[in-house]
Length: 304
Ligand code: ADP
Ligand code: MG
Image (cartoon, rainbow, N blue to C red; front, side):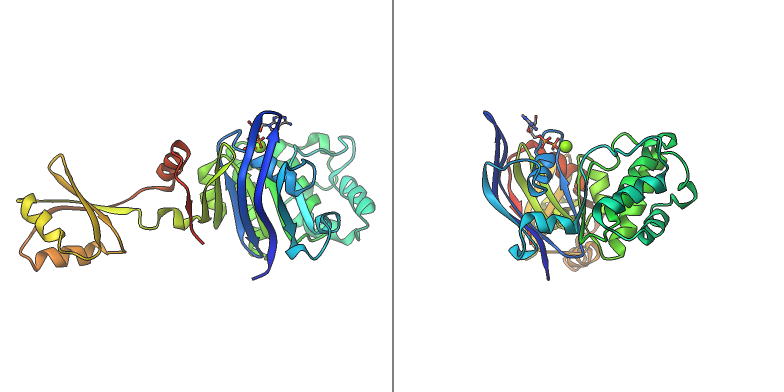
């Protein structure tokens, strides 16, 4: 699959502060990527570097397989990394016309993009009359005017009310469904979970996880079991090839897996050994717990 952006071993120092350490990742065409991390973890710095507005300390990045210079490549990138800023006394349409003029884009794109972000009915309203959510949507329309290969958004829902947040997320999904690659930085786990398919988790400038959003929970599910005789239960469990560890606590037996195992199959296996469960629950470490776990410890996991 076509590579849009590849970052290798990026480091960034602001004076004595190490903002990025050995950050590497790759963006392939057609996916929605999230950079997830708490405030100050280096998300905006990463975006700033690849957009050529922040100088890297060391490492490399290349756009579109390195076939074109950064300057030329950035013409195929739509990015919103600051609060949306347009002329307040001009209408939405007038503002976009100005952008078209500067970037040499046909005016016909304006209607299409305003429709996409749900602002066509407000095209004649002044920018100053817009809510923050509408301003953000206008910024998205503006960034999409030249049909970029990738849309980059830094904390696109910050400061918005729930309805505004919902609208922005719906638009992002719509854009992704049309085939545009998206890179979104967010400190909100549920945003990344809702919108992205791939995620890079940063903490204090280092990569804690990179891979599919779903992959964060692979092999993380476990069972909580109980029977009349837990000693017999544990003995039986020890003979199962899919089970990695067994722990006992509070009269319950916790089973952690090496390989996937369905609850029904585990139940059947025990039943055949004459063990009857009084309690069987499948637990999955939620992405939230894992994210908190990841950002608390220094564990590094990579999954491709
Ligand atoms: P995020 O976007 O994840 O909140 P940033 O990339 O903005 O993180 O910041 C990463 C770290 O670099 C933070 O500790 C921040 O204070 C620091 N930092 C960011 N920009 C500058 C700058 N221009 N000068 C000095 N330190 C900076
Ligand atoms: Mg930031």
